[in-house]
Length: 315
Image (tube, rainbow, N blue to C red):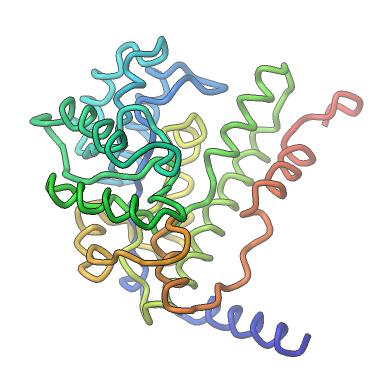
């Protein structure tokens, strides 16, 4: 118990230590573009709102990772124009595969063929960057041969890993709002905003503390977000809160120029998740205590108790 308390105290001290603003830098990236309709907006309206919110927040370049099979769905209608609008607003696009599959569930050959289909669509388009983000952040799981085959395949294609260093599970909170809307349940939007900001800020703080313990510095972070209605609503607020906390929002180009992270290919028993986590595991770094609301179970409970309006009391 004494060692546990000491470890917790050390983490709290690290998080409380004053940090220079230039020491805390982060880029914003959005997955699954073009994403299906959410609880509040049509895909077209959501894109317009997200572009406007990023402009309002002074974010000059975010990265949008495209899953090209989504273009063939009903919600994907007009998706090509929406992707072009992101680029016209100064943002960049990259490869998130064609059909968004788990690497540990298909062969390396089929996986590479799938990402090649997305690459064919992306090739030559304005704003394209040669980055590939693994769907589900699944880099092969326990299958080391498959992991290495895909890593070699990416290198042969001139693609770099579009890794993530920080994550706040925004996809789960978005799913909860969609489920509530379909069930006809009213939501307290102020409480939803608070929960969104808490979960994202705490996810960033957790991963930055882990990165500092692993690397001895705060790297140029890459934040995993998704093209969601919640992002369209609250991204400007998130950026404002990050700046209050001393963060500088940088471009994805700047973030992926971090030479140490760009060269990292962790060899761990299960390759999946944030690069921060895998590098810590590889180096034997014990992770700090995660904020409670980072877990999906806790986020579900907070959503149920704080965001959903109770019919019996109208609050």
